[in-house]
Image 1: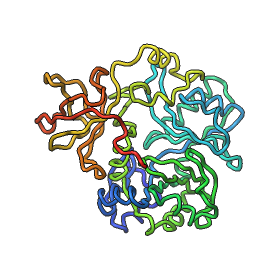
Image 2: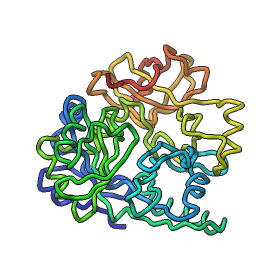
Image 3: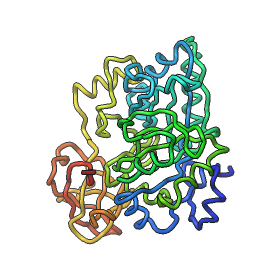
Image 4: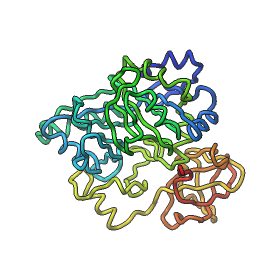
Length: 366
Protein backbone atom coordinates (compact mmCIF):
# COMPACT_ATOMS: atom_id res chain seq x y z
CA UNK A 1 0.00 0.00 0.00
CA UNK A 2 1.30 3.43 -0.94
CA UNK A 3 2.30 5.71 1.91
CA UNK A 4 0.07 8.68 2.65
CA UNK A 5 1.79 12.03 2.22
CA UNK A 6 1.37 15.29 4.13
CA UNK A 7 0.49 18.31 1.97
CA UNK A 8 4.02 19.76 2.27
CA UNK A 9 5.89 16.54 1.53
CA UNK A 10 7.61 17.90 -1.60
CA UNK A 11 8.36 21.24 0.04
CA UNK A 12 10.06 19.42 2.90
CA UNK A 13 12.08 17.36 0.42
CA UNK A 14 13.24 20.54 -1.31
CA UNK A 15 14.39 21.84 2.07
CA UNK A 16 16.57 18.72 2.44
CA UNK A 17 14.46 16.71 4.88
CA UNK A 18 15.08 13.01 5.41
CA UNK A 19 11.95 10.88 5.56
CA UNK A 20 10.65 7.84 7.41
CA UNK A 21 7.50 5.74 7.33
CA UNK A 22 5.35 6.33 10.39
CA UNK A 23 1.83 5.04 10.84
CA UNK A 24 1.45 4.59 7.10
CA UNK A 25 2.65 8.13 6.33
CA UNK A 26 5.83 9.39 4.64
CA UNK A 27 7.02 11.94 7.18
CA UNK A 28 10.16 14.08 7.70
CA UNK A 29 12.33 12.56 10.43
CA UNK A 30 14.91 15.37 10.40
CA UNK A 31 15.81 18.52 8.48
CA UNK A 32 19.20 19.50 9.92
CA UNK A 33 19.95 17.13 12.79
CA UNK A 34 17.87 15.68 15.60
CA UNK A 35 20.08 17.27 18.24
CA UNK A 36 19.96 20.73 16.65
CA UNK A 37 16.19 20.56 16.23
CA UNK A 38 15.74 19.31 19.79
CA UNK A 39 17.85 22.20 21.09
CA UNK A 40 15.84 24.72 19.07
CA UNK A 41 12.64 23.61 20.78
CA UNK A 42 14.17 23.67 24.26
CA UNK A 43 15.67 27.16 23.80
CA UNK A 44 13.63 28.97 21.16
CA UNK A 45 10.95 27.73 18.79
CA UNK A 46 10.63 24.75 16.47
CA UNK A 47 7.84 23.85 14.09
CA UNK A 48 6.77 20.27 13.31
CA UNK A 49 4.60 19.03 10.49
CA UNK A 50 2.36 16.52 12.28
CA UNK A 51 -0.22 16.14 9.51
CA UNK A 52 -0.06 12.38 10.01
CA UNK A 53 -2.27 12.81 13.08
CA UNK A 54 -5.95 12.11 12.47
CA UNK A 55 -8.94 14.40 12.88
CA UNK A 56 -12.44 13.05 13.52
CA UNK A 57 -15.35 15.51 13.79
CA UNK A 58 -18.49 14.63 15.75
CA UNK A 59 -21.73 16.64 15.66
CA UNK A 60 -25.41 16.31 16.42
CA UNK A 61 -27.83 15.92 19.35
CA UNK A 62 -26.02 12.86 20.73
CA UNK A 63 -22.44 14.01 20.03
CA UNK A 64 -21.62 14.50 23.72
CA UNK A 65 -23.09 11.14 24.67
CA UNK A 66 -21.14 9.39 21.92
CA UNK A 67 -17.87 11.02 22.98
CA UNK A 68 -18.46 10.09 26.60
CA UNK A 69 -19.17 6.46 25.72
CA UNK A 70 -15.96 6.01 23.73
CA UNK A 71 -13.40 8.09 25.66
CA UNK A 72 -12.43 7.72 29.31
CA UNK A 73 -12.39 11.39 30.30
CA UNK A 74 -15.53 13.50 30.64
CA UNK A 75 -16.11 15.22 27.31
CA UNK A 76 -19.34 16.63 28.71
CA UNK A 77 -17.35 18.75 31.14
CA UNK A 78 -15.78 20.71 28.30
CA UNK A 79 -17.02 24.18 27.40
CA UNK A 80 -16.68 25.38 23.80
CA UNK A 81 -13.01 26.14 23.16
CA UNK A 82 -11.68 23.65 25.74
CA UNK A 83 -9.72 20.43 25.22
CA UNK A 84 -8.70 17.41 27.28
CA UNK A 85 -6.34 14.47 27.07
CA UNK A 86 -8.15 11.13 27.08
CA UNK A 87 -7.87 7.42 26.33
CA UNK A 88 -9.94 5.15 24.09
CA UNK A 89 -10.41 1.72 25.67
CA UNK A 90 -11.99 -1.64 24.87
CA UNK A 91 -14.31 -3.62 27.18
CA UNK A 92 -11.31 -4.99 29.12
CA UNK A 93 -10.02 -1.46 29.79
CA UNK A 94 -7.02 -1.87 27.44
CA UNK A 95 -6.13 1.25 25.50
CA UNK A 96 -6.80 1.27 21.79
CA UNK A 97 -5.35 4.77 21.52
CA UNK A 98 -4.78 7.99 23.42
CA UNK A 99 -6.16 11.23 22.08
CA UNK A 100 -6.90 14.91 22.60
CA UNK A 101 -10.60 15.79 22.52
CA UNK A 102 -11.68 19.32 21.58
CA UNK A 103 -15.06 20.87 22.32
CA UNK A 104 -14.86 23.14 19.32
CA UNK A 105 -15.47 26.90 19.52
CA UNK A 106 -19.04 28.00 18.85
CA UNK A 107 -18.11 29.32 15.40
CA UNK A 108 -16.99 25.85 14.24
CA UNK A 109 -18.97 23.60 11.91
CA UNK A 110 -18.80 20.60 14.29
CA UNK A 111 -19.35 20.11 18.03
CA UNK A 112 -16.32 17.95 18.86
CA UNK A 113 -13.04 17.02 17.22
CA UNK A 114 -10.67 14.36 18.47
CA UNK A 115 -7.18 13.47 17.26
CA UNK A 116 -6.31 9.78 16.85
CA UNK A 117 -2.68 8.82 16.39
CA UNK A 118 -1.06 8.25 13.00
CA UNK A 119 -2.76 5.55 10.97
CA UNK A 120 -5.66 5.18 13.40
CA UNK A 121 -8.13 7.60 11.83
CA UNK A 122 -10.03 5.03 9.73
CA UNK A 123 -10.12 2.60 12.68
CA UNK A 124 -11.47 5.19 15.11
CA UNK A 125 -13.92 6.57 12.55
CA UNK A 126 -15.37 3.08 12.07
CA UNK A 127 -15.49 2.52 15.84
CA UNK A 128 -17.49 5.72 16.35
CA UNK A 129 -19.84 4.90 13.46
CA UNK A 130 -20.42 1.35 14.66
CA UNK A 131 -21.15 2.39 18.23
CA UNK A 132 -23.47 5.16 17.06
CA UNK A 133 -25.43 2.78 14.85
CA UNK A 134 -25.54 -0.06 17.38
CA UNK A 135 -26.95 2.29 20.03
CA UNK A 136 -29.28 4.35 17.82
CA UNK A 137 -27.52 7.62 18.57
CA UNK A 138 -28.12 10.73 16.50
CA UNK A 139 -24.70 12.03 15.54
CA UNK A 140 -22.67 12.82 12.43
CA UNK A 141 -19.13 11.41 12.44
CA UNK A 142 -16.72 12.61 9.75
CA UNK A 143 -13.11 11.58 9.12
CA UNK A 144 -11.56 14.98 8.34
CA UNK A 145 -7.92 13.83 8.31
CA UNK A 146 -7.47 14.68 4.63
CA UNK A 147 -8.99 18.13 5.15
CA UNK A 148 -6.38 19.42 7.62
CA UNK A 149 -2.67 19.92 7.88
CA UNK A 150 -1.48 19.98 11.49
CA UNK A 151 1.55 21.91 12.71
CA UNK A 152 3.05 22.01 16.21
CA UNK A 153 4.89 25.23 17.07
CA UNK A 154 6.79 24.48 20.28
CA UNK A 155 9.32 26.13 22.57
CA UNK A 156 9.66 29.03 25.02
CA UNK A 157 9.33 31.54 22.17
CA UNK A 158 6.53 29.70 20.36
CA UNK A 159 3.47 31.50 21.73
CA UNK A 160 5.04 34.90 21.18
CA UNK A 161 5.91 33.99 17.61
CA UNK A 162 2.39 32.67 17.02
CA UNK A 163 0.97 35.93 18.33
CA UNK A 164 3.20 37.89 15.95
CA UNK A 165 1.85 35.96 12.97
CA UNK A 166 -1.79 35.73 14.07
CA UNK A 167 -4.42 38.44 13.89
CA UNK A 168 -4.81 38.26 17.67
CA UNK A 169 -2.69 38.01 20.83
CA UNK A 170 -2.48 34.37 21.87
CA UNK A 171 -0.68 34.88 25.18
CA UNK A 172 -4.04 34.84 26.97
CA UNK A 173 -4.92 31.44 25.48
CA UNK A 174 -4.79 29.04 28.43
CA UNK A 175 -3.43 25.49 28.42
CA UNK A 176 -5.75 23.02 26.70
CA UNK A 177 -7.85 25.81 25.22
CA UNK A 178 -8.50 26.47 21.55
CA UNK A 179 -9.96 29.16 19.33
CA UNK A 180 -9.95 30.28 15.75
CA UNK A 181 -7.44 32.84 14.54
CA UNK A 182 -6.06 33.93 11.19
CA UNK A 183 -2.44 33.17 10.36
CA UNK A 184 -1.23 34.91 7.20
CA UNK A 185 -4.90 35.37 6.32
CA UNK A 186 -5.80 31.69 6.80
CA UNK A 187 -8.51 30.76 9.33
CA UNK A 188 -6.92 28.22 11.67
CA UNK A 189 -7.88 26.37 14.84
CA UNK A 190 -5.12 27.09 17.34
CA UNK A 191 -4.77 25.22 20.64
CA UNK A 192 -2.28 25.67 23.46
CA UNK A 193 -1.25 22.04 23.46
CA UNK A 194 1.85 20.05 22.54
CA UNK A 195 3.92 16.90 22.86
CA UNK A 196 7.37 18.21 23.73
CA UNK A 197 7.30 19.29 27.38
CA UNK A 198 7.56 22.92 26.27
CA UNK A 199 4.99 25.67 25.91
CA UNK A 200 3.54 26.09 22.46
CA UNK A 201 0.55 25.77 20.17
CA UNK A 202 -0.81 23.29 17.68
CA UNK A 203 -2.50 24.50 14.52
CA UNK A 204 -5.17 22.84 12.40
CA UNK A 205 -4.89 24.41 8.95
CA UNK A 206 -6.96 23.77 5.82
CA UNK A 207 -5.02 21.24 3.72
CA UNK A 208 -4.74 23.50 0.68
CA UNK A 209 -3.48 26.45 2.75
CA UNK A 210 -0.72 24.52 4.54
CA UNK A 211 2.19 26.15 2.68
CA UNK A 212 0.97 29.68 3.44
CA UNK A 213 0.86 29.09 7.19
CA UNK A 214 4.09 27.02 7.35
CA UNK A 215 6.10 29.68 5.51
CA UNK A 216 4.76 32.38 7.82
CA UNK A 217 6.76 30.77 10.65
CA UNK A 218 9.95 29.72 8.85
CA UNK A 219 12.79 30.66 9.31
CA UNK A 220 11.93 32.27 12.68
CA UNK A 221 10.96 28.79 13.87
CA UNK A 222 13.30 25.89 13.12
CA UNK A 223 11.71 23.13 11.00
CA UNK A 224 11.81 19.89 13.02
CA UNK A 225 11.18 16.25 12.19
CA UNK A 226 9.80 13.27 14.04
CA UNK A 227 13.25 12.36 15.37
CA UNK A 228 13.39 15.42 17.61
CA UNK A 229 9.72 15.02 18.46
CA UNK A 230 10.58 11.60 19.84
CA UNK A 231 13.54 12.68 21.96
CA UNK A 232 11.55 15.64 23.30
CA UNK A 233 8.51 13.56 24.25
CA UNK A 234 10.68 10.89 25.94
CA UNK A 235 12.32 13.56 28.10
CA UNK A 236 8.81 14.77 28.96
CA UNK A 237 7.69 11.22 29.82
CA UNK A 238 4.89 11.13 27.24
CA UNK A 239 3.45 7.88 25.89
CA UNK A 240 3.76 6.91 22.23
CA UNK A 241 0.83 4.88 20.96
CA UNK A 242 1.97 1.69 19.26
CA UNK A 243 5.22 1.69 21.22
CA UNK A 244 4.63 2.44 24.91
CA UNK A 245 1.34 0.63 24.57
CA UNK A 246 -0.14 -1.41 21.74
CA UNK A 247 -3.54 -3.05 21.73
CA UNK A 248 -2.21 -6.17 20.04
CA UNK A 249 1.39 -6.61 21.20
CA UNK A 250 1.47 -4.75 24.53
CA UNK A 251 -2.07 -4.08 25.83
CA UNK A 252 -2.11 -1.68 28.77
CA UNK A 253 -4.77 0.14 30.71
CA UNK A 254 -4.49 3.78 31.83
CA UNK A 255 -3.62 2.78 35.41
CA UNK A 256 -0.66 0.71 34.26
CA UNK A 257 0.40 3.48 31.85
CA UNK A 258 0.38 6.15 34.55
CA UNK A 259 -2.41 8.26 33.07
CA UNK A 260 -5.18 7.37 35.49
CA UNK A 261 -6.04 11.10 35.66
CA UNK A 262 -7.83 10.69 32.31
CA UNK A 263 -10.23 8.10 33.76
CA UNK A 264 -13.55 9.51 35.00
CA UNK A 265 -15.35 6.56 36.55
CA UNK A 266 -18.58 8.56 36.97
CA UNK A 267 -19.10 8.37 33.20
CA UNK A 268 -20.35 5.25 31.40
CA UNK A 269 -17.59 4.64 28.84
CA UNK A 270 -16.65 1.34 27.22
CA UNK A 271 -14.25 -0.40 29.63
CA UNK A 272 -15.42 1.50 32.70
CA UNK A 273 -16.19 -1.58 34.83
CA UNK A 274 -12.79 -3.12 34.13
CA UNK A 275 -11.03 0.11 35.03
CA UNK A 276 -13.05 0.51 38.21
CA UNK A 277 -11.74 -2.92 39.22
CA UNK A 278 -8.18 -1.91 38.32
CA UNK A 279 -8.58 1.22 40.43
CA UNK A 280 -9.81 -0.77 43.41
CA UNK A 281 -7.38 -3.69 43.19
CA UNK A 282 -4.31 -1.94 41.85
CA UNK A 283 -2.08 -3.15 39.03
CA UNK A 284 0.79 -5.62 38.92
CA UNK A 285 2.99 -3.54 36.60
CA UNK A 286 3.41 0.17 36.13
CA UNK A 287 5.09 2.55 33.68
CA UNK A 288 8.39 3.95 34.96
CA UNK A 289 11.36 5.98 33.84
CA UNK A 290 14.98 5.02 34.40
CA UNK A 291 18.49 6.34 33.72
CA UNK A 292 21.45 4.21 32.80
CA UNK A 293 24.39 4.81 35.10
CA UNK A 294 26.78 3.09 32.70
CA UNK A 295 27.71 3.78 29.09
CA UNK A 296 25.04 2.60 26.65
CA UNK A 297 21.70 3.65 25.16
CA UNK A 298 18.44 1.83 25.99
CA UNK A 299 16.31 1.10 22.91
CA UNK A 300 12.80 -0.16 22.32
CA UNK A 301 12.62 -3.92 22.87
CA UNK A 302 15.68 -4.29 25.12
CA UNK A 303 15.17 -6.53 28.15
CA UNK A 304 15.18 -5.16 31.68
CA UNK A 305 16.48 -7.61 34.28
CA UNK A 306 16.77 -7.57 38.06
CA UNK A 307 19.94 -8.06 40.05
CA UNK A 308 19.35 -11.84 39.92
CA UNK A 309 19.44 -11.82 36.11
CA UNK A 310 15.70 -12.45 35.73
CA UNK A 311 13.83 -10.59 32.98
CA UNK A 312 11.29 -8.32 34.64
CA UNK A 313 10.37 -5.97 31.80
CA UNK A 314 11.20 -4.45 28.46
CA UNK A 315 12.23 -0.99 27.31
CA UNK A 316 9.35 0.60 25.42
CA UNK A 317 11.12 3.90 24.66
CA UNK A 318 14.70 5.03 25.12
CA UNK A 319 17.26 7.53 23.90
CA UNK A 320 20.38 9.49 24.73
CA UNK A 321 18.78 12.62 26.15
CA UNK A 322 20.10 15.69 24.29
CA UNK A 323 19.07 17.98 27.15
CA UNK A 324 20.41 15.90 30.04
CA UNK A 325 23.25 14.21 28.10
CA UNK A 326 22.29 10.95 29.80
CA UNK A 327 20.81 7.67 28.54
CA UNK A 328 17.15 7.48 29.57
CA UNK A 329 14.33 5.06 28.98
CA UNK A 330 10.82 4.03 29.93
CA UNK A 331 8.99 0.75 30.31
CA UNK A 332 6.73 -1.35 32.51
CA UNK A 333 8.05 -3.00 35.65
CA UNK A 334 6.42 -5.03 38.42
CA UNK A 335 5.28 -2.61 41.11
CA UNK A 336 7.86 -3.95 43.57
CA UNK A 337 10.59 -2.54 41.30
CA UNK A 338 8.89 0.78 40.57
CA UNK A 339 10.12 2.87 43.50
CA UNK A 340 12.55 5.67 42.57
CA UNK A 341 16.12 4.64 43.21
CA UNK A 342 15.55 0.93 42.58
CA UNK A 343 18.47 -0.64 40.72
CA UNK A 344 17.74 -2.67 37.59
CA UNK A 345 19.78 -3.56 34.52
CA UNK A 346 19.09 -3.03 30.83
CA UNK A 347 20.52 -5.55 28.37
CA UNK A 348 22.23 -3.42 25.72
CA UNK A 349 23.63 -5.50 22.84
CA UNK A 350 24.08 -8.48 25.09
CA UNK A 351 25.64 -6.58 28.00
CA UNK A 352 23.86 -5.67 31.21
CA UNK A 353 23.99 -1.96 32.02
CA UNK A 354 23.07 -0.71 35.48
CA UNK A 355 20.10 1.65 35.64
CA UNK A 356 18.08 3.36 38.36
CA UNK A 357 14.35 3.92 38.35
CA UNK A 358 13.33 7.56 38.60
CA UNK A 359 10.10 9.57 38.52
CA UNK A 360 8.74 10.89 35.25
CA UNK A 361 9.17 13.30 33.60
CA UNK A 362 12.93 13.40 33.11
CA UNK A 363 12.66 17.04 32.04
CA UNK A 364 10.16 19.62 33.23
CA UNK A 365 9.96 23.15 31.89
CA UNK A 366 10.68 25.77 34.52
